[in-house]
Image (cartoon, rainbow, N blue to C red; front, side):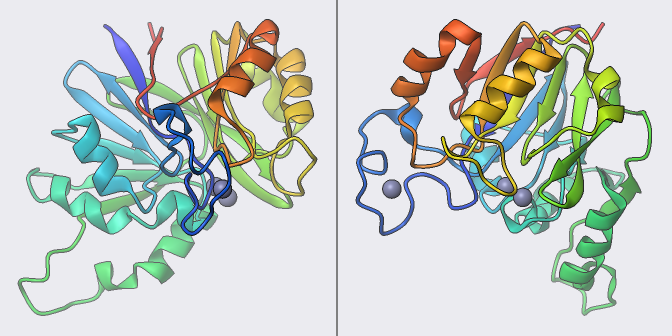
Length: 258
Ligand SMILES: [Zn+2]
Ligand SMILES: [Zn+2]
Ligand SMILES: [Zn+2]
């Protein structure tokens, strides 16, 4: 069955353009330089899952024409990946069962704190997301796909990426633990986050991306979580000879998930 991934957002935590910034990237007329917060949608038949529910979740779903949602996978609890979670109620209230939300146990604990009202009795009429939190420990299945959580490091914080078929989505990665390497063998597409040219304590730089891509050896590497330090066009010209390409909002990728 055809499985496709669509980038709903390829921007860093502030998005691009950055409000109030007058730099050349933030003023760029190239639509590929407009980046909502990082998130992807996976479609298999009629079923759909999202990875991360950032602050622009609602806008991204409207833009991509998402008419149903069957599962959400979270990479970690940072605001740019999580804060749109409340809006999943648009999908859960049209369903006869709750939306499963997988993520690292830590992130699920944060959800119980930050969105504590979901589990508190309130007066009728407020409308609450109907979600079921499921720790992503070991392989699991969603929308008919086998999903492998990939432990990665985001600075000093352990978080998760996910492998679906021949594609792995590793955002907010600064390093890959040795134990995770075998989980990434034989990839067609590797998605990595990249925030700037210079090194960064919690994210990969361009040099770090090249190093990791050489190590994992996917057929191609796509970049997301991009900042206003990068013009799309420059990344494309500078990196395509390494089989590394910048993703952009709305970009679609076919996946082989068996
Ligand atoms: Zn982030
Ligand atoms: Zn800027
Ligand atoms: Zn983060």
